[in-house]
Image (cartoon, rainbow, N blue to C red; front, side, top):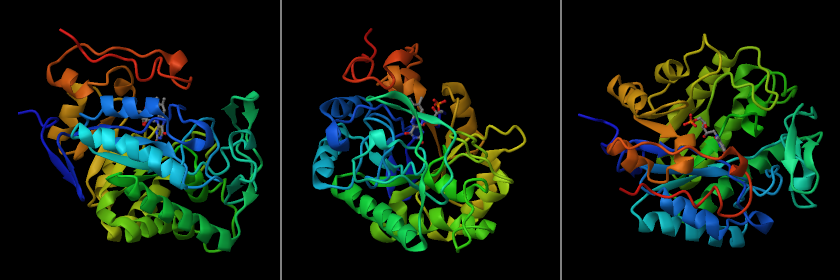
Length: 354
Ligand SMILES: Cc1cc2nc3c(=O)[nH]c(=O)nc-3n(C[C@H](O)[C@H](O)[C@H](O)COP(=O)(O)O)c2cc1C
């Protein structure tokens, strides 16, 4: 019997099936990082996923860094997100919000004038980000957070988790990979701090561990997940020992009893991220990267994880769950409209019609 279409409990989250929509930045937010009407349609169309993890969303103005990405730190943003969560719940779906503070992977072109670009240390990420104003631009040289400011950022995440619940989300997921703020703290090359947030492994994983504890304390650990990808070099991340960092972080958060770990395959061939997570965590695992129906089913049958997430397949297949259930062909997406504006190539991919 297929496991993909069986219900699954992840903490307080009750999934109707084990197909999760992975978070995808699609740059469709309106001015002031407020979710748009197209985003309501887009998420409603995909509500048959057992769980939607909505795109990376900034917990503060400082946490913004890309163009047209959403945020959740004021009433206008909360009200707009409420229209998204109502639409998904109206279709019987569940949705959590991914909280993404980009730290140093940011350009001031893409944030409010008063917002700062901050990081564990004042070291620039050698990468570029797209801006509507000037095209591809170098990332800012960040300001190093003081120890007191680190506490304030943890408070921002906590407040964002509370606002996410107010906006109707079923929970939140901390974005802990892809070179953003949590990973900047964990990786040895981007963290040169000498306080309790830098140096030893235990110190470098302290920031994400304290963020998760703060969010769990505010909304309940059963509604908090964590996304990681051990050894992911994306956005200029370099680390002496990625497997040890991932293990230290997972060990540090194990007592919290989080709803799930959302774990991506490691790009390092010698590092089996799924096995590492299973060895160090009792939390249910959502497995990600490169799955199709057959490999996802196999992974569930092997007991590798509790659910599987799909990102790219959801772009052009809003009814992915039904297509997989009935073995219908999958549509392919247009790369040119991944981060463009408006409904085209976003909320206008049709469901299957016989
Ligand atoms: C357009 C696009 C945007 C993405 N944005 C995010 C994001 O905001 N947060 C995140 O954790 N991962 C993001 N990812 C990574 C996906 O969630 C996923 O890990 C990756 O695409 C591999 O899964 P797949 O093989 O099912 O596509 C993005 C991927 C794509 C293609």
